[in-house]
Image (cartoon, rainbow, N blue to C red; front, side, top):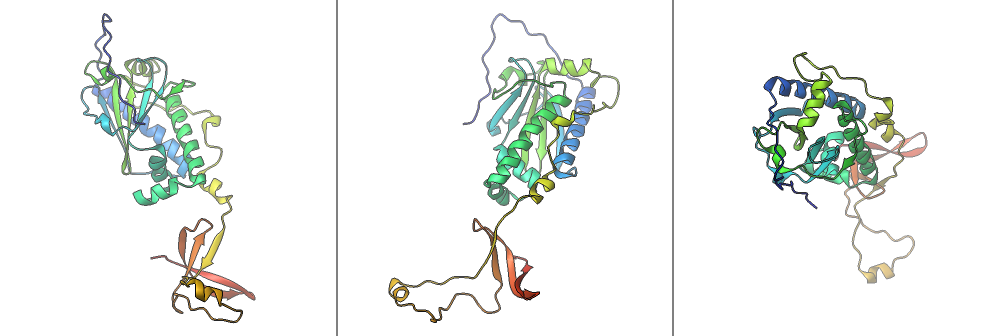
Length: 282
């Protein structure tokens, strides 16, 4: 179910006017880039060049909120903390981010149980890594959408657009969180912010390739089959020859136990045992 941004007015409560200067927006972008680089290095053993971070003062960024699929809040109350808005399901976003698949392949990858477990762990670690690096360590996490007034001018909030390959994630940092970052000297006149080391428990238990390396999958080599009517099937006997729809010079099909095509293969021999030589599926 898609969440909607809350826009109920608060009557009788004066709101202080606040603004985020360009200098702090630049420093916030640097901070987020550092956090994302360390997260990607843990999960992909490399940073990726397809990440683009854009920071805006509230009211200066036209956010199409209808694109946001779900919101996650880290913090308590309507004016506290950080909101993360996903424009697609976390399975689709993180399948593409972690496995680097095209859109169609991402959806197929996200459907596997192993991929789902990895994506869930990556998503949780992403939130913890992000909140800890922005002064929100141990903040409660809930599925709460931000109020509409946070997107208005002079609210003191900052809006961040994170472009990941073909996917997009929005961050909303409240005015109180921006003030917390200033008090921690993360933002302000001090120049480029320094990223403190995160506790080791917040890191993934193992790198992605290490986790996949221990997984055992079943592979099957198959031929193109044929169709038989029930009458022919009933009269089959031992020694009969059944013609398959598979040419002699045509490659075999290497599939997973779930029937997904991995690649093509050619039958061969290795040390008195039958073997296959892998070939491209294209």
